[in-house]
Length: 115
Image 1 (cartoon, one colour):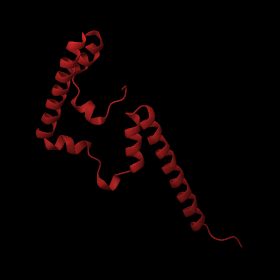
Image 2: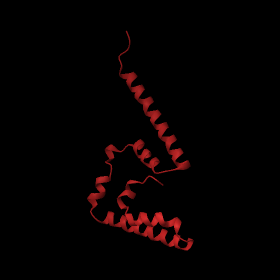
Image 3: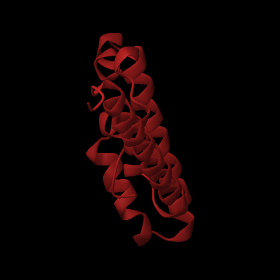
Image 4: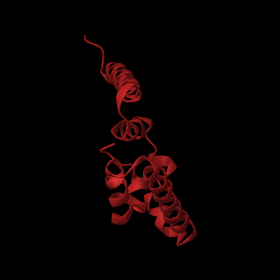
């Protein structure tokens, strides 16, 4: 996948990305070992991130007041491909249309009647 999640960006290291980039050039027997090794390194980085300073993770957390389902779905869609991305994009479009409809209904209610 070309796009990465916020968590991937926080735990990513060049050494892990090099291992992943080298995978297609390794023999089949080496690919499985290197794949598992890369994931173990990512897991170590994730554990280090969450057990280190909790304030760092708090910085990336959205406050509940600002939580926007449309924004979350858009972020999820940006890291997906294929059928899952299509389903998410359809859901995003449907929610956006509902929000536009609700906005137009609210504007009609707030306008004074014609005389």
